Length: 113
Image (tube, rainbow, N blue to C red):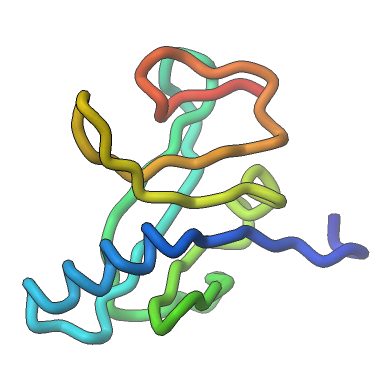
């Protein structure tokens, strides 16, 4: 993967939600961090957290004034994915549409490759 460009897509809904969180926290530097960890029902799981600092191995993705951080190893698993914020009757959550996942479980945060 080192020879090709690795990227993720961020949605407008995600940008709106992060801006709302920045306002609520009075922290315009608040960034969403997306990681892929081993474990979960299907072998890998997504982890969402917030950060104010960029680590040395982070890739920074910008969209409409917000920034999302993905570490170098996680980006290998997330390449080509879309990060979204979805509100529906069941609730609201950050979601990833990952074209690299061969299956996922019902929790929405676990996947296999």
